[in-house]
Image (cartoon, rainbow, N blue to C red):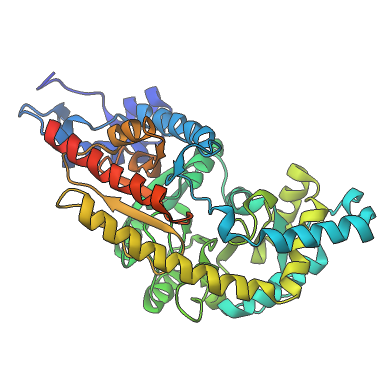
Length: 450
């Protein structure tokens, strides 16, 4: 009720079993939205003025975490339904993957070297694949040996291993906001505390805010996607990269680089990795082939630097080995030069799809709708007018066999209620066009009702 005092920060921290930093961040967000008000020496009170529609939809932190988990579980089931237009999942349609080349490679291995399929490939993984990855990473400025690389079960596994190597339960890390939802889930599993640092759609993570936050909290690591960030598509410029690396040394934290979309830059030459300029040995690099070759193969890798031995040990304990057949098939595919041809074609198509997508949104969505301007990848961050709750849009769209991922899934603090992520790595045809127009019509309807 208006005027009622709410529990103190420490009491809420104990009741919700989250850190004081997390509660402070949630209270700060609620205060910004006018839901509560701080009174010096007295505590926090429910704001006595009437709430605006945007403020009324603010979700308490504990409920938000449960909602994110429920939403992502739902998405997993939705993403397997062939009757649904998959704007929500960050999975490219098979049309954009080298399925035939991989089929030939796997078939040849099964016929000529069947023993490969039965043998264990222990950590750190296939030597031939690690050699090919080292060669490819020359393009992003990294000079590596195969021994610098550990193969993982996708990039999510690589991120988990990196976090486990540099943190322990109760530690605080910095993450981008909005953030890749896999990082949010990793934080929950590893029982870490997270400080959300704003990530701007054009310039990427706010480094001034990161520096200010590090002065207040003992941040052990910062998880960042410098190239084509998920979900905003932001890419850090070279000055920002130097600043981030210098900041990690000055304020003593580790950078965990997620470069899973690095190969999908629309420029002729891909952006450098942070790892390429890791003069202080503070960057752990992670990536995978899930977005460009074969999501189902679950082949990623991590370059751990001074944490490499610890990461290899964790990888061995958790998974013992990585499937041999898929590693060998990808190594063969990389070796024959087909990957670069595949990437050139795919990047061009993604860029065309992006333009088409942005044009349709401008024509059919309500006035005031904005989209990000990614320079690579295949994800678009859509900002709706304040009257539109993306969770409501998600529910109504799903009833019409259209899947989106609401902004709620990209924050631990109930932000981005008027945003959603859209995947444009789809076979763009009349059906896809119609679905995007229908999303715009649903937004118009929600605005009229509100």
